[in-house]
Length: 318
Image (tube, rainbow, N blue to C red; front, top):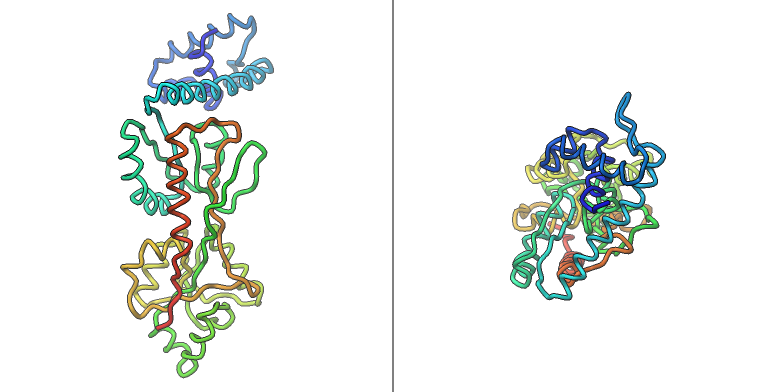
């Protein structure tokens, strides 16, 4: 048995498709087939059913569990030996949503690359539902996730509570509430309740944050007046800044756009049942994964960055 055959076996077990796996690994189908045959000869049993479609045999399931452990320890060993030899070379694989990548990477990469210029950084842009499996199968070293469920094989570090804000232009508020607009603003600066702004047209999101916001409306038996519905919060921001509707924006989004926010936009922290509504951001990684010097430094920079974002106060009343 050799490690490369075991690695190819575990990769084929992910796709269960010879052509797709071979193309992904940049090898020929024949080469991949030879490595699988080599393993089957070594163990003296079939690891895959070939018909009607490629699938793992019972023996293959057991070998896959062993292969996952070996491949993970192989990565750990390479990181440990790199630290011992102080070569400071390696690969760092990090995942987060597009918004969070666009915010945190420009802030931390210059400092990281200045210290570890020979580390190859590989970035994955994905939502939380896709990121956790990629950390679990070793495709990512760590990822920033949203309100993630605890998993026995993962370590989760809280990064920040990403406060949700209700934003609207002063002209929109005046048009909908007239003389009472000023009193509404003064009350909302300490925390806004959606029932007080029910006359406004809203940007509605059919994503994870949108589901949280829907709970706010449902709790007070209000059906929001939808101006536009979208999966992308950036659409809501654009519509709000055009004074067409109110929208809900996370603190990270506001911080990233603070230079573009028009002067006549009110920004109020959103409350749910009397408490600030926030999305918890966490960094997840495998429990038993060895952390190299450069990985620890990258994590330190991430923690510092998110701590700084959390301390920015965005609420304002026009």
